Image 1 (cartoon, helix red, strand yellow):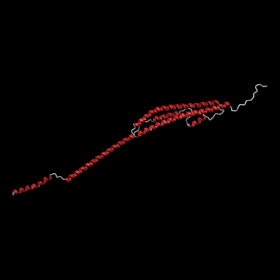
Image 2: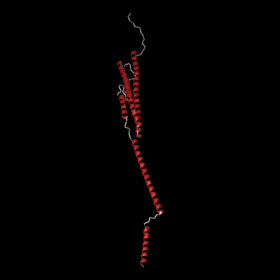
Image 3: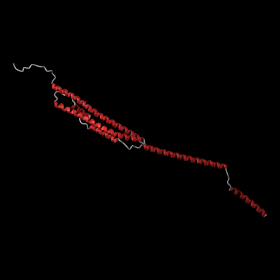
Image 4: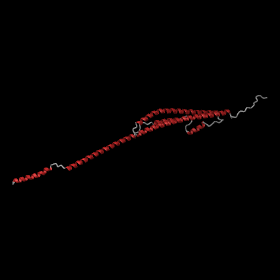
Length: 250
């Protein structure tokens, strides 16, 4: 009886021990493993996509930074500007014209002085002193106009020498321009230099034409004055008729 009870107890213990041991074994499930691998692959793909997105954003930031750098270059101004010197040259030539001696350069004063000093003709009653004084005034006007022309020529000659250095500076600035603004400024400076030289050429031409006009007017007035003097010397112009003269009385 005891042996039978011990055998049954051992069998029951063995039966209860087998599931417990089986519960500790690792069970391989192919379906679950495939699902886990697919999930890991998808996660890895998401990570790669995020990395690519971050790289794109970083490249975009770099492009924006380069764009800002280029915009900064385009907005940068040139360090050299010849405008003050060009304006000084124009001011000096204008001063020479405004300080011209002799006949006035303003229209209102010029008309009045010209009608007085360059009359259309001289009457027979005009005194010799008056004609001589007028002739000397006109001669002084021509001399002053020639003097002004020579001053203008000297000023333009000095400006040409200075313009050579200015042109070198502008060309150097244009070649080293870092952006659109600097290139535009260099172009404007070249145009300003050309405009200044054109204005000076016009001013010199005005001075030369003024001297020529005054000299021609003086020559015409000299002819009119000579004609008046000849008329005064010849009298009324009536031909002389000889008549017998009795020197000794009969």
